[in-house]
Length: 146
Image 1 (cartoon, helix red, strand yellow):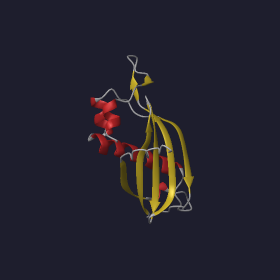
Image 2 (tube, rainbow, N blue to C red; image 1 turned 90 degrees about the horizontal axis):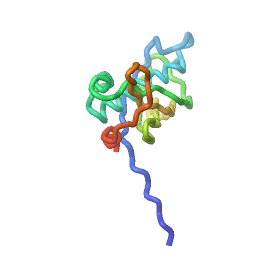
Image 3 (cartoon, one colour; image 1 turned 135 degrees about the horizontal axis):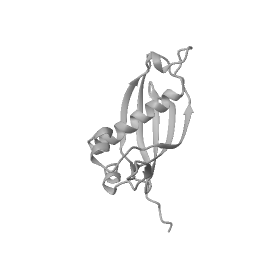
Image 4 (cartoon, rainbow, N blue to C red; image 1 turned 90 degrees about the vertical axis):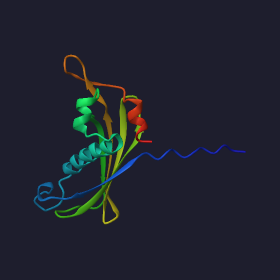
């Protein structure tokens, strides 16, 4: 008899609607690819706000938290987006580790996957000299995503 492996638990997913604005586009009217990463950054903040019930600004005021710098990223660009397009971004944490975590952002255009972004970020605080340092992500924060 073979032991079946239990499927991984689904993590919280946040959906956010985004409209492509003129300033997001290159001279041809297509989204300039770095703008996707800026949108993903905004979506990360919205995901944590949904999970924790406080904004990133409030996190920085109330927690031992100074941000979540990006340390690795990649994107797959499948369908181009242009000025005026309405997109839906689905963001979720794929995995938490001690002080880092992986995110997945799926950008949908009319229900089809247009862009997929994968990121690794580090939870940081400031040491007494004001330098950023990786800090263990509180267990209660991780629990809010389960």
